[in-house]
Length: 482
Image (spheres, one colour):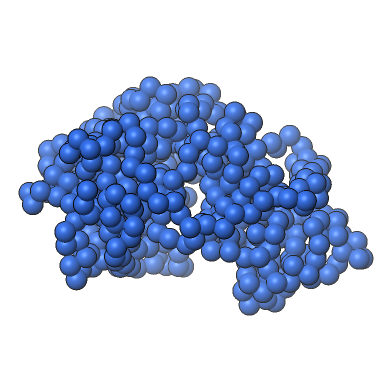
């Protein structure tokens, strides 16, 4: 059918993959960092000039990378807001990432609409710091002149698609991107402009939400640009997950998402009710503590890296001789304990050894993510297997414990640029639909990810006992938190 490209504009870099549209085979790749300066004190900046994304894209696509490409799909970081004036110029730098400035704004919005239940009924979930709707509230309170000039609201992938198409009058987004804004309802498939006004202080133009297989447009050179989507949705699409599949992502924080047939309504604040890139739904539960708990333990034990921590943990046995770590080192979101601290329970003379603490750190991290899986299971989301992503997924201590603690088959895919691959798959779908060779209801079938499959096996009863001990300590320490 041809050649397509997928680009992923993450917080730190742009990755591009060029793929065979029929099989998904990666033909060539490009990469470029974002030319961003870190803010004082380090970390990622909360405000970014969107032109940096274009500069990075141009560098990643250099050397004829896109030669012969017929369609492009775009994914980009979630929780981003690009405010434009009536002429299409940026009012201020884009607000990106988990922006802690809007924590107070989130609480204000919850109260302004009448509480968590009102928000859950409106858009499926409760505003969180960093979501576009809370960023708008912060903008209206902190930079009222910029808020007053804001006439159009785009997210990062919307803005990139619009730029690639030459800044047309029509601006588009997809269900996946819209579902993360806090002012679009997955249940109704429509915006809530009143929530934009509640946050920003006035109405603003919102991009048209188009279907998963629709094209956003065609460049003057005849290059088809697909709808685009958020980075999370693109990664799920690139992995090829379907009903019964969940994805557990191990970063500094952790996230659990699963494909579901219906939009969820959640007033607890633990579930973000996203739509996916195929027409289904993708509820997400986040934990604040994942690999950061492992790194903290490694530092405490004087170990140079996570590989050393894993090697040490493998010298212990399941259950870590009774040690249980609640890894809530930065507070926690699941369960909702923003001001708590971590807990180490079960200290006895025989358990006070480095290898047992190392093992408890891995088991505590995975049990915390199992709690997140149980939040989804408790809402009727089926989980038959778990895809485990992130560099830490390769660690022997993770792979040894995860199947039994999650209680299901665990798949560890080969590392790849799954968000970029998902974007390319979306481009192939839109290209096929435009040519009449693909059904708009059925995405192209691509080669599956090369993966290692781990089964719970005979360790399952031991894992269940370890998990129950973790739950018991959590209930004693934080009764009724979950």
